[in-house]
Length: 499
Image (cartoon, rainbow, N blue to C red):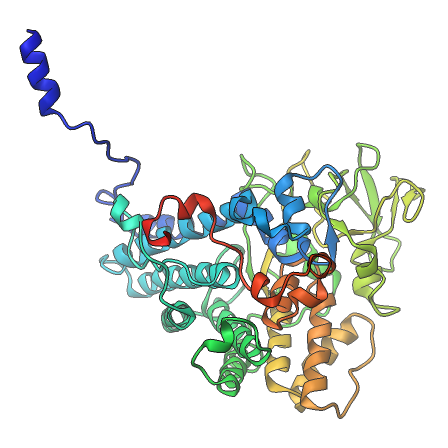
């Protein structure tokens, strides 16, 4: 018996193989399967670790926002640009991880739904959405990490998961543009914006943002981008052409400016004309990610109860809950708005009231520690559960992309002046040079898109991270230091191609 046991032991391999890769063999049989697979792609970006990282990587690490005193170490590292710890920063790792989860789910739809025997229009729509989400994820990864592995097939084995990063930034970005071209060809334009889903206009909008990103990054001399092979002016024109299909194509009537500034941020109007791509979260969801706690992140803690906010310049009041003080407005940023800018006066709160309209707290000095952003407020909250949603691509963003790419044309002036007029401001100075006009557009983006996750990327593409962020200047970081975050060590430790 002992001898037999020894034979068995010696004959067995002690090498373990990782389990957990899913099987698609019994799925993708029906239209419902195809739609479920597509919804599953979007679900990955709803995870709280990803949705909160949008703010941490887009705003918290700039001079527009600051964390609370007892914030997590990861948040303080990002805010303070403690780059020696970035390869182990949990927020960066989660953003990286969930981006690739999104990509893998998109690859599954691309590979499987394209072969299904279902209605051709539905098939094209679902596959097009998958191409868009793959492009969107690689766009986000490229802006933050530079070259990463490009997966275009589902990951089914450990060997599939370990791939080398893209050879260079040209390869990286060409994959993004290739996917977006396919998405534009395959997807329809919705008759009405659909919360949590994308269509052809979203793909065109992302094309415009991506081409402008590269045009300005190379023009500004941003490290690594200056080595890429494209022509700056050609990419400005490509950005303009894509943005024009969003703002000027007569066949596109679904998305347009919302003339009511407050309506853009009304949680009951997430299908409003400004929302080209907005996350899908609802207070009826069973778990966080299905519902949102984003409002809690912006609102200060005051008294632990319900209080009320004035709506714009009216006496109408809406209620909200108390908050956690996680995303705190930097006072110098708040003071930087032009006098009379409604985006300052209406979309930030320096006073809160009780149900009778009596002042409860105000900034400065009366129980309110900072003026908080009220773009993310749900007056029908249920406990901590809200329907507030990150806005990923907004029509006004693409109008400003058009204006920046075009320079001081009549149409470009019309677009930016509409945004300023809606904010209660006068027109941009007429007759500006191309450089001065583009600088004015970039300044406008700071305040129009405040706390929507764009600011850091605008600084990065303009090669200004090392000059415009006080924490970076104080530590002497250079443009080369800050152009990309390091790949998380949890990835480099497992992937031999990073050795």
